[in-house]
Structures are given as structure tokens and as C-alpha cells.
Image 1 (cartoon, one colour):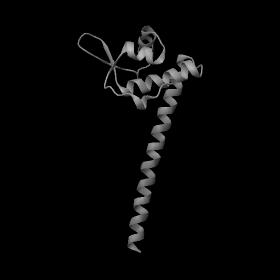
Image 2 (cartoon, rainbow, N blue to C red; image 1 turned 135 degrees about the vertical axis):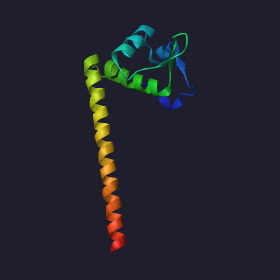
Image 3 (cartoon, rainbow, N blue to C red; image 1 turned 120 degrees about the horizontal axis):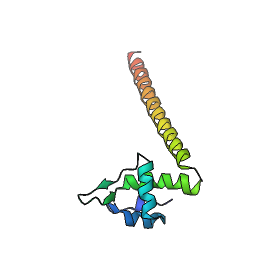
Image 4 (cartoon, one colour; image 1 turned 60 degrees about the vertical axis):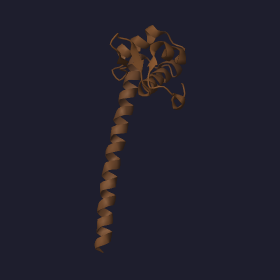
Length: 110
């Protein structure tokens, strides 16, 4: 995995991203076709421009496939599960904040 906190540019070319990860450009293009969440911006010539968010997503895919040994299907499932867990945490946080607000209102009334 690479440290995305030190990325300074707004956009990176596919060649720069391939070099960061030690991957071929064709593998990055293949992963782009396999993972719907990985969608770099394309300029008028069709050149891919990767943002920090794209690189973070690619970092996660790289970690699952190359470092943890997931199949592509397994990595897709893991990403779906992580997204679902994040949604559940967000919903729970909203509910807890509502309960807190209601308790604070009750406290004021006492």
C-alpha cells in the first residue's frame, strides 16, 4: 500500500499511478473495468487522470488483491461489505445523535 497523505498533485497520469504501485498500465485499466468504484476522470483525448480518491480506491483494491490474495470477485464482495458497514455506522451515528438531542431537551425541561 502507498501513503496517499503525501500526494500533492490534483491529478496523476496512469503512468504515474502504475509506477506508484509497481503495476502495469494495462492491469490498472483492467481493474478499472472490473471495479465500478474506480472511475478516473478522462480528458478530451481520453487520457485517464487519477485523483487522490481514485488512488485511495486503487490502494484498497491493491491491498486486497495483491497483498491479501483476494480474487477479484472476493475483493468486490469485501468492498461491498465495507461500504455496507460504513452505511450502517453512519445510520447508527445519526440515531444516536437524535437520542442525545432528545435527552438534552428532556434535561432542559427538568
